[in-house]
Figure 1 (cartoon, rainbow, N blue to C red):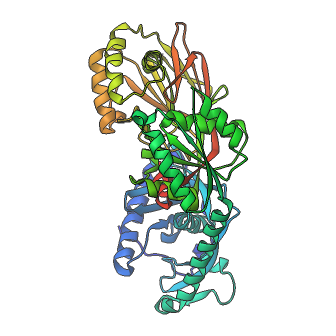
Figure 2 (figure 1 turned 30 degrees about the vertical axis):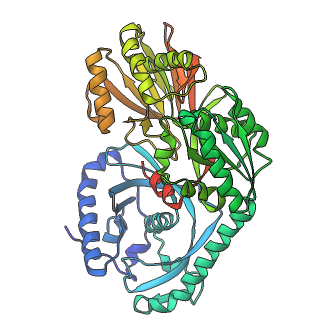
Length: 490
């Protein structure tokens, strides 16, 4: 139902809203429908409108509805956190005063924690215009309007006079260019860490091209080849504080080593990812462009994207850790590889053999101190959605929410493995009922009475027991601007 939007001057807009209780969730569904209908009606009439807060239609509840190109998001009881010190000036508009624009200052980045319609805890890290959008809507929940945040007496304009604001847009553009110039000045030196056997020994050729691109852009760069397992970690630790950017040319395993070296050095030096491995899952999650020049450009002038890491013992991971059948396959591949390049097809014979050889001892799984399973035969802890190259295991995982996702498989028949693999390939594993369970938490403990192998980002890492926890905003990656949007939403 289309509701009337409260307009500037209505005293109800200045009232603070109360939290939604779990018992009110059925009522929320009706409010969400009204918010959607009202916002879409406003969008048809004015051509704008991406989000709306419940107080704008007279509902004094802490509820925000957002509808972007990829669909709707409902924020129940949102909590705005981690506001950046870096600010930005924007011309803000509002459905409560559709003909008026107000110049305000907003945090360039922020994090919003909330519950969804299933009462699950969620989080998003926002930047740029989406950060501004959610800050605007969040203010409505506290009875604060954009007009109260105007920078000065000259920060108001009618929408019909928007053409006179172009100079302000040019000022903002110059600020952005100055910000990029500062990044370029900082990034005068780079270390390129390359795995020479990555991608069927294509790593060295790509590294040479990377060096040429960096040097052409004015960076002083040095190329460092890994010589043995773990050497990438040593090189990153040694050079992290000597250069302004580390460039990793290799697969996910090489990137894991580089990130671990950064953590060893307690360094905030950013990492640029140049995919040259077998699966290249991290680059796929980042949505890196296919051409090399575009991949290298963020190392020179791109933005930074801070992401979470998983950690077990003294080992950090970007993608996942696993215990059980997949770790047994990883163990076998490590023995077989012995310094040789591999492809995804190399795993198939080992998967088929281990399916009949591995004893599948049960695994106990604890999430944030709660025992959630005792019959799991394969447990995967993920920081990003992808797993194993082809599979999207965790539908809602994001490396910016401060949580790790857990997938537990319970039945060991070959038919079930094939069925689950097909569902994961299609990205529909969450729809499988009965013998697959998903959990989310900040600390996961895996244990077993039998010997259960364990891997981290596709490398063998001993056996259970294992304690795994999340490290929020642990490492920064040099990424194209669009990548931040790709990772924002779980």
